[in-house]
Amino acid sequence: MDTDFSKDAFFKFLDYLSDKNLVKFQTVRGWRSAASKLMEDLSEAEEADVRTLDIEIAVHRTANRDSGSISPKSLNTYRQRVAIAIAEFVRRQEDPAGYKPRTLNGQSRTKPTNGSSSRAKAASEPATAPKKHDKEPAHLSSGLTLSYPLRTDFLAQVVIPRDLNTVEARRLGAFLLTIAVDYQPD
Image 1 (tube, rainbow, N blue to C red):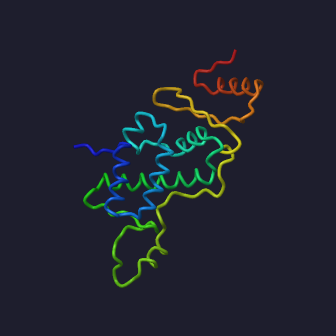
Image 2: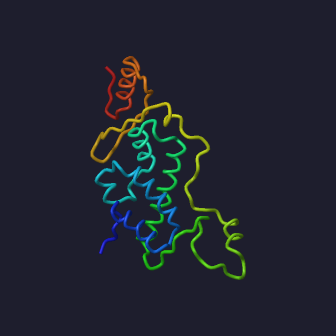
Image 3: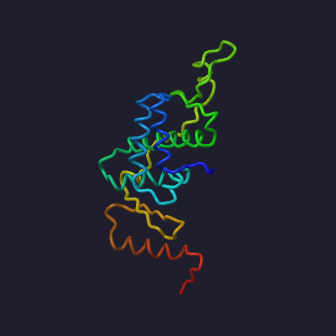
């Protein structure tokens, strides 16, 4: 039997964590809220397998869809929560019998050995949470990210100023022509 990595299985996994009290209720609620926002407009492939979800593109889609109503800080929080939740989901799906949810400090729930405290162990080992960016990319607040399904298996993205004028649009179009693999100048 194939392992199910679908969006539906992902949300059932979050219910499972909450129902079994394996992760704090507030944590699961935050993961679910962030995932609901970022997973609103998924492709068929992403719906079928959340491992294929490009979280950065999902953040840009959400920023464009809810333009101005979600702060860059909130989008960054959503990005981090969804990345952690998907990582937990994948670990659970790949090894259901051996799965142990992570605690808030990013460590697996295991009892300390040889008398050392789990707090000391957590301080010595790096957490596996996604990298936190010092600055939010400028294009999230000042530019407009547009996605275009160039091919069935490729979603092209371009970030443009919100007040793009006709001259700039023509320049951008001319530039795109020059980077095509079959471009031949006149």
